Image 1 (cartoon, helix red, strand yellow):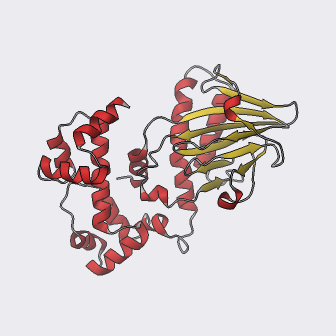
Image 2 (cartoon, rainbow, N blue to C red):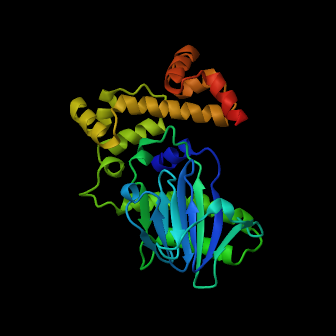
Image 3 (cartoon, rainbow, N blue to C red):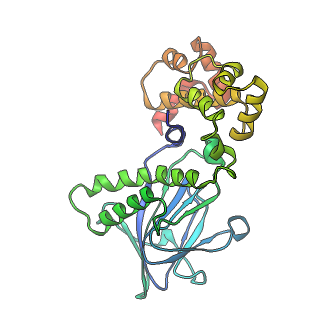
Length: 311
């Protein structure tokens, strides 16, 4: 089971929204907070990312061709040719929908910068702990041979947006969708083994990773701390301490979280009856499942399904 893919899929509520931004100096664009995670890819030229709240988000970040920015919680910020250029609100700018994703043009007649900007619709009300542990802002340069797969995706995006051809309308959204996995894979792999902590350490830990894989691969199994510890090759107490310190919650709490997350996905995305959803998530009866689900989500499974389908 690919835990990264599963964790992100459990949070997705819609396809990514994106726009190509063409700026010519002087230019500055104020972007409001979004419900999800924000991203920017510098396709051509240079610019700056300026946090809306420098005290919380750090100082201005210089960006160059090939750079990728990921904003975990979609916080508001400014993109600009220089940090001092007065910004214009994004809502005030017109978008030309003549390209595969639409183009927003801003600025004067100076140096050109081309970016892909957008957001991934992720449920921030119930974020997976893997995502919650990420830095607020991830900056990944792809020049000089760094992150070759991410760099290849950026190059493909740039080519499709510069010269749209037959199939571009399908290729561009698929590349944007894949970009999130490339970004997070690159960040996790960047963490030095000796310094890695939390989920960055858990995913490569010889004891915790097998337990996480077991939970994700078979959430319906009647796992116990003892049975997971056996897979990890540790005593019950040692395993529980190690798992909790890295994952951020005890093994049984994470098992329940993942079962409920899996149930919510099944209710949203399938027509499976409640008895089948209960069986696939480790509950022996529909009643036991409904009680656990309501405790976690604050509503019965049937009401959750109707609400999710109506959204």
